[in-house]
Length: 538
Image (cartoon, rainbow, N blue to C red; front, side, top):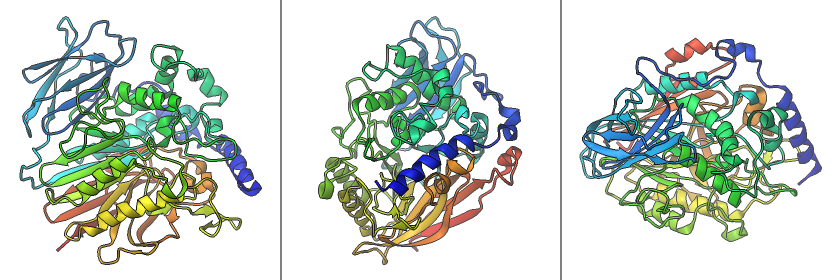
């Protein structure tokens, strides 16, 4: 790594520590307290509820404000599900049920083992069966909802307000694409921003890396560090809306960084424990899908429900839409020309589903965005911040693997090749909102069926200047120089989200943004799309 790049990271870290946005802007929301988000629904002793469904199954994660010494019981219609304890103290539970009827709304009733009601009943509907003729599907998608107020992140209640605005459009499903937690442990810059700060240690303590996570003091640290970034943001507001949580680098408790001191990925065993434990405690894994092999990495683990996958998911809504979700961090390799982000079997699954004719729309949702780059290490592209302060591919990016770009090209080729389908990729990670289309990658010509690429927008992120790529990295997100890429909306570094509507012939994209500099928190409740794009094959 060049001395100039080292000095930039050092100064960036120091500046970020000193330039968090003034908390007076959020005076009504501070100090940080657990938000119940009750509204008119009686949340009882429940802290948070996050459900996911497919056409015949439900998986629901619940945490409580009071410990449950005996398994609580969830009634789904007439079926009784005994809770599975996910922590060692009785605070976090999961409920799994299969053999449900497709496209049916069930009434859910959560009680203690003795029959005492723990919260008000609520409805939750299964998805249509894969072969069912379906006319409409609405998706609410965003990224980067994590972060703690002690680190200068947007207060949980403000993030919850953005979440509620998205939910007000009555989506059929929600995708939360990565970075639900920011508590970096080893990365040279990230750790000084998060885990190694004195206030972080005073608040949550420190991990003992040689110990297990659950059942040791590490469990308490995890709940304080991660749980406090998730449960106040969601509460029980998504209890009737299926949600799909995809993990990215920070969910393994580190930033994707590579220096002479440390390379943070592939994840170490301790990072894997933290990622798996956070997921087990707080948000649902991906349910089984007939079109997704049971033997993909981190799928069908014995401590999970049958066929559940931790890193690779499918959102299938009738015969109308299939959303392919994939985490690039767990299976990435550092093998130079043959390096991959995704295990070869995962790539084969993606290729098979992408070229399948059994569904009208197929959309890719990776945790790592194609199209744009901010010059950071763990990207598809080799663009790096050059000596002149601009992104370049003329200089070598330290520790970047050329095989990652080869895999990118294979996946993009598969998406482009289905000429009768609208090619669309939606991702997050870059803390920005953007829309464009890819016409070429290297020598590959996609111009006859350009790939539409969308950055969905971050619900969270640090509001100060160094919460965005341009402040942290010295450059905003820009199209990679490997590509011919046309930007319709250049990356906007503001909080936001996207609503996507699928019909038989069209995909309608509505993009929302909230500018903390010019808009009040009250304005969130009236947000309207600042840009609308209709994609069609007509």
